[in-house]
Every structure is written in structure tokens, then in C-alpha cells.
Length: 333
Image (cartoon, rainbow, N blue to C red):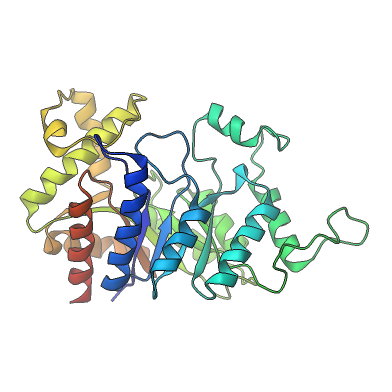
């Protein structure tokens, strides 16, 4: 059966706090470790009231300390926001503390709006161009000590120097990301939960372009998807109303904490809103364990995914824990 993993954005619910959302992530991680999930990734987003996950390296250390079996990683570190040396050293420290359990997932986007991105990068010499590949190459040259003699970074070592970088994963939602992941020899996590590009085609492009690297000697394709699972289809539909309203609000530039299912059901949706909901629901799997498994099966088959990574952005923390428990049971049968 396909391995299951979790992508956690530390969702903030209306009436709650960001601090509580982070504590919920620790609780969910313990839960997932006991359920047998393969890995647990935390995200990097900034200036979004519905998402408390802004510092994945800190959360990874906290989660790794309270779990025993899962791999813990970033989904991902947004490389445009960080100096490559800083990323290398933070993840080497994590790998030193929790050897063989850390993943370094990298993203190409800043994970925020332009003004916040500027605030994050203003001391780094901002370029209007996509400099991800340049930063990635710098990261790898620091790791391999590949800067030639005479280069300013020739004698720079990422510390601790006797610890290797964790395995590298590239996150993406496009054909370009899929091809790039293959060309740099990274594992690839495709964000089907918000992508407009076809997941099966992305996975094919990744495998067709894969070149072995020091990080991975063969392709590893992870399918990221949004799941809301409950004991019945009716209960899952009720919980997923939170997701529906969140999508509608984001489309209008309203980045608010997650609404309760009751508030979401009472919202006055326009025909345009309902069209956006339908478009997003086509990418989601909502229902009982049997319904969710039936919805995911053809997607897994079409993409030939090596692993399924699930995110669940709903109002109730206990309902989120229940959703993952039911999913683990369904795929463990």
C-alpha cells in the first residue's frame, strides 16, 4: 500500500490563536507518528492569518524531538527568502540532532505577498528575476565544497561540516518545477491540492527528466493532495465547508482565520463563488474512508505516485486528527 505523509500548515481557526495552532501541530505530529505515517512536513508561509507555520526549521526540531518514527521535514523552505548558507547550516544542525530523519524540502516561491517578500529579502540584494536555481547551486556548492580556488566562498564551510545535508525535495505545481526537480536530481513533491497543471503529466515529466544526484539516485515522486475524511460522507461535507469559504475569501483577497462549518454554511455565496468552490473540490477528496479511498485510487494510479502527502485545512483540531486516523486505517486495510 502507498505510504502516507502529512503536510501541516498549522491552520489558525477563528476564535483561536497562532500559538494554539502551533501547539496543535505538535499534538497532531505525535498522533501521526503513532498512526504510522511515513513523514511529516511543515510549511513556510508569511503574513497569512490562517497559517501559523512561518519558521519550518524551528518546528522541525520541536516535532522531531517528540516523535520517534516519522521523517520530519520542510514543505518547504522557500529558498528565495534565505541565504543558502543559512539553510545549509540549520538543516545540518537538525540532521546532526536527528540523523536519518530530516528532509530538506525547497520551494521556488516566497510563500507570501510582494511587500512581505520584500521585507524578508531587502538585505539580500533583491533581484526581480527568479534566482532559485542560482541559490540552489550555491547551496550544493557549499555542500560539496565545489567553489574553485580564488572564489570568495572557497573556504566557507557550512557547519557542522562533518554532517551531510538531508535528502533534498523540490516542491512544485507546474511543468517547469517537475522538469527542474528531475534535472537537479531532487525528489519531487507535486502540489495537486492547488495546481492547475495535470498531476499525471507532471509526474511523467519529472521521471523523464530525472538525473541521479548526491541526494537521490532514483526518482521519488510525492503527490500532495487535500483530503477531508470523516465517519460519514455527510459529516465530511459539513467539515469541508470551511475549506469552501476559505477558497472564496482568498480569491477576494480576504486572508482570514478558518471559519467554523456553521459560519461557512451560512455564508451568502454568489454563482462565481460556487464556481470557484467546484473547481477546488475537483482537486479534493471529501467523504468517508471508502469514498476518499475510491476518489484517490485513480489519481494515485495515473500519477504512479511513490507516496501520498495529505493536507487537511479544517476548523476543528479534533476533526483533523480524526480525518488522518480514518485515512491511515483506510489505506492500512
